Image (spheres, rainbow, N blue to C red):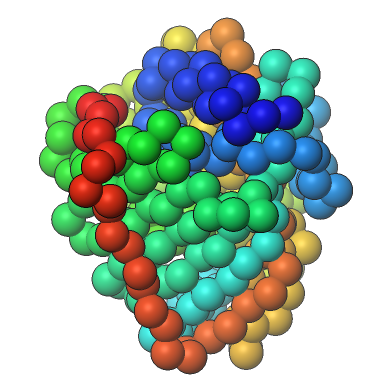
Length: 281
């Protein structure tokens, strides 16, 4: 596959993503992820479920140990690996590097032998540029909130990528807690016709999945965490799986983390070339 053809595929996927209710921000990285070619071997095993399958559950008084959740304590964190995207019966692979400065910024770089894109996320906005068509963008969270009506900002994105809940669980009065057929605990909340579900293993106290669903429009974003590995005294998901359904199309993305470093000094090089054209998301 040529880079030009990969660019066309990227634009096609972008058209689908732009139609989604929730995905536009929370999996913003898909704006660039399809630029690579060649399938990667590390794929998460997505559950063969329909949009309603995880709603079959029973109310319970059980709960997880919120104070012992696996929030990673770090100043700087980096991990690298590869990703695989499945779309329209085709696979696309690429390499990734994530760099985190806790509560401040995240830099995501993608490459296929050579650098292809960069995305910088900070507390005020998301910026990115891609090399195949020499374009860049800036988006602030207020604009996205006004369009989507969902409060999903920097801290939620940081937690999503690290395998932490994107909603504060200490406000237990906002949640109903269910137990599914595998004895996992599901914290569920519905707000303005949007359902949030977070599934935990009560034995390990790990977050296994979280989803944001718009049932009436048959749209959802589901994130699965698997194959945890120790990073100091914490567990970092080695595999992250993302499912996107816009009611018509299904996109599957697997992020496989291979190497990790914590609390080393990190640089965050990000400079948009002067000859790149700004695009509107």
